[in-house]
Amino acid sequence: WIGLLFFSEAHQRRGYGTGALALIDAMAHEWGYRRLQLAAISTNPGGLAFWRREGFEEIRRTTNQRFTGEVIVMERTIK
Image (cartoon, rainbow, N blue to C red; front, side, top):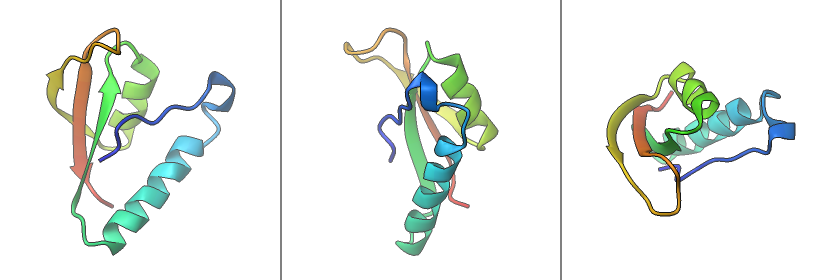
């Protein structure tokens, strides 16, 4: 489960998210996990687009008082 993964704007679109996800996939695969879930915020279209490109699909929505917008729970098979 990835709660929330944030990179400052200065560090976005540099491959850090893809690299972090590759490491998470490798560890999760080694530990025997089959699926990966995360939470994304609906007011972050760039983040949502990234997760969708990485194969994550929405499985439910919820709210959290700490965030503006809905919390979108997403999931995909570990690569």
